[in-house]
Image 1 (tube, one colour):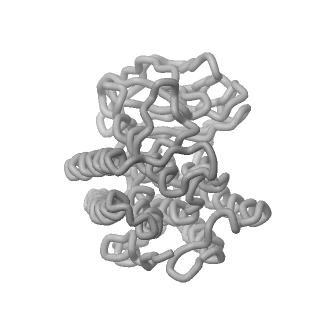
Image 2 (cartoon, rainbow, N blue to C red; image 1 turned 90 degrees about the vertical axis):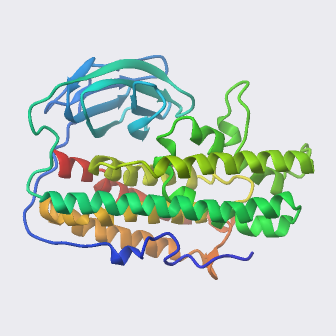
Image 3 (tube, rainbow, N blue to C red; image 1 turned 180 degrees about the vertical axis):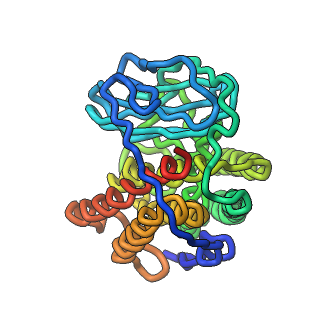
Amino acid sequence: MRTIPLPGRLTVGGLAALALLGTSACSVFQSNDSGGGSKDGAIAVAASESSCDVAAESGKAGTLVFDVTNKGSKVTEFELLAEDGLRILGEVENVGPGLTRQLVVSAPEGKYQTACIPGMVGKGMRNAFTVEKGAKGAGEITGVDAKTIDAATAQYASYVKNQSGQLLVDAKAFTAAYTAGDDDKARALYPTARMPWEAVEPVAESFGDLDPKTDLREADLEKGQKWTGWHRIEKDLWPPKTGYTALTPAQRKTYAADLMTNLTTLNTRVKTLDFGVDQIANGSKGLLDEVAASKITGEEDIWSHTDLYDFQANVTGAKAGFEVLKPLLQVKDPELATTLDQRFTAMQTELDEYRDGDGFVTYTQVTEAQRKQLSDAVNALAEPLSKVTAALTL
């Protein structure tokens, strides 16, 4: 398989070039574990297959904390959405049965929706939620000068725009090979073309209309839903041995054009986006959730088995978010910053074990024991990464 070198590919000027500032001070992360009530100002959410009980219908502008407890038997996720129900402002995924996980998000005054999504498929169960006027200065980060905060958010915005632009270039080459019938070239380009998408996937997911059309897996299709995007083309390039009818040249052009339209729309939208500190931190954690939810299991690229490329892109994107926030975190919680440096290094070391030249081995070559090792490294990184938003904003 022809591949493109990975080091530096998913950076904007290189991650090492992101400004790193350091001073001393620290804050302590407060866990808001909730069994149905709320602590420390957190809003309790009890989610199950049939209900989404949010303990409050409103909150104060600034930093909101939701303690999400899964009372059901299926893994679930919880989202805070804009009033239109499309744009996701914050989410916590992979909340296993009986577990409580926390969503920390900054929200201005306005009307919103909350959603519990059992099985993490579909729109889920939704409730109206109002953010009322808060106290002056609510949600502001203390102890860090405004220039440092502005530099961090500007750097991340540049990173996202860089990846979105690269995504268009790579996807154009991939779809050109696919529509021309050059399947060997298309198969070689597929995993690397996806990497910029995977590096900023939470941004793409924040647009509720784009992600399902672009990255939906066949297993997640709802009744009557049309299947388009990366994985529809993937199946055509790596078809099952029996029971599959190949797409015609005309159909190939249709699906390729649709993919490019959606990626172009994404590229247009990200040019006008501004990112808050909480969005960057939650997005980094969300990328680790993506790894845990579908990359470790091999469910993401089920036909091509190129999951390790997506895995690498998710980790690189998460690190990009951490690196821009690191100057803030070194002020607010330097111990957490040091821990994350160490855990990202350990995670990359694990991934590097599966390199094949400039790329990676197919995921079918990774044994169950090795997948467990990768999963352990992901969990070891995800745990401190989940504390960043609270460390910075509470």
